[in-house]
Structures are given as C-alpha cells and as structure tokens.
Amino acid sequence: MERRSFLALLAANSVVALAAKPDNSAPANEFSFVAFGDMGTGDDEQQNLANGMTAYQEKHPFDTVLMLGDNIYPDGNISLVKQKFERPYAELLKRGVKFHAVLGNHDVRKGRESEMKYPEFNMNNRLYYTFVKGDGLIEFFALDSTNMTGQQLLWLDDALKTSTAIWKIVYFHHPIYSSAITHGSDMKLRGQLEPLLVKYGVAVTLSGHDHTYERIKPQRGVQHFVSGAGGQLRRGDLDKRTSFYDEGNDKVNSYMYFEVTPEKLSFKCLDAQGSTLDKGSISRAHAVAGQ
Image (cartoon, rainbow, N blue to C red; front, side, top):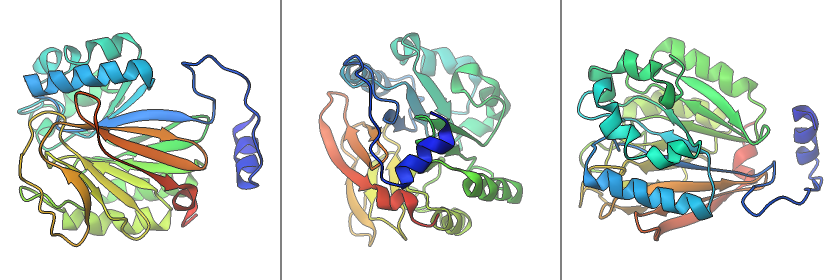
C-alpha cells in the first residue's frame, strides 16, 4: 500500500486488516523504539543498563534507539568509542539495532566532526536530520541543541511543515523543560523551539543533559521527557516542586521504551532489571493537533 493511501485510510478511521505474522514481528503499522541519553561513561552503570536493555529486547523487540547526547564522555574523543559505545551495546548492534545520535555538550568538545561521521551513530555527517519509521507512522527529528542556529530553525520549520507522519517526535540534548537542579530548563532553547512544536503538532520531545528521568506535565499540547539517566546518575537532583513536574526518578539508571500505533503512543521508563518506574500513553489527538 502506498504511503499516501495508508495515511488517507487512517484519517478516515478505516480499519486496516493485518495479515498473520510471527509472534516476534510487529504489524506494519506498529513500531517500537528506545531512547536515553548521557550514557557514554564506559562505567558499570552504563554496562548494567545496557545488559538490561538487551535482555528486554529479547521479549520486546525494537530495532531503533535514540541517543540523546553525551555519547562519549568526557569530550567526544572518538578513540574511546569502543569502550564507551561498542562494548556496552555489542549484542544489540549484533542483532541489527540502529542507534541514531544527537550531540551533547560533552560530545562537541573534541568529537563534533568525528561523531557525525561515525557509521554506528547513523548521523551521516549531519548535525540535524530526520528519518521515518513504520511505513509513515512516525517521523523523528534529530536536532543539534548545542548550536541552535537560525539555519537549523528554518530547516526544522520546513521539515515539520512537510511531514506527513501521524506522530512527530523531536529529540535533542538540552531540555526545554526540566525540574533538575543541576541544569534545569533551557529557556532560550524553549523560546526558539516551542512555537514550532506547537504549530506543527509535535507529540513528544526527548532530551537528556540532566542525569535524571522526568515526565513533564503536557505543555501547550506537547509531552516532554528528560531521559538522561543512561550512565552517571545525579541522585537527589530533581526538584518535584516545580509547576510542571509530573513524575520522575533520580534514584536509579533508566531508559525509555515506546510502542506506537496509529491511535496511541505508549511509553515506559525502565531500570536495569526491567522494572517499570513510570508508564502511560498519549492518544492520537495529540498527534494530529496543530496540523
């Protein structure tokens, strides 16, 4: 079925018949992915969480990971990529899982060019880019929040405007909403991005930078997450008294797992043992708002 025809059926609320598939294969209009940031320490915390993620993937298959920045501590030196990326995620890479990176403030110190060109980060020598999954179900917009130029904002405006995906997910390193004490909300970046997120019906943003997990109360129809607990954790860093704090965890390392259908986006925050720290879902109404 062509992409335009598929989306037209969904818009008319038609029922799409699905052929029988093996138990380990999702239907064409379902998609799963994982997201986390600030992972690239090479320490036991990163490895333990990677092991848990690998075990979870056996029963809950996913083939896409969003890397939310600070991929190689302390300065993005690509000579450390084996220790701080290839080794922890060796089994996932072996299974064909694709990692799609954005750069964090630590990455750009020495690794801006080399990380952009590193094949396993799938940036294809671009600081910001998009890719589509699930036969047009979902489009990801990867941004460079370490250097948010006017050119990048114009590109994002056009990319969001022309997207035909049901779900639009934007991810970047610096959070525009965060209750963490160490960094917190990047107000300048919020002013630059939020009007576009709202205008074009972006459903979700994902960021790291603060080494915590946080689900923010929906802001102007957009659901924001901070998932920066992939490596070194900042225990006790969340200020739960902020006006936009909804749920969070700064006690254990974690990552996020998403399941997406045309009607619903479900999410979980998971620790290394596979225990659920937070979960919920977003209805399709959020996906179509603003279009």
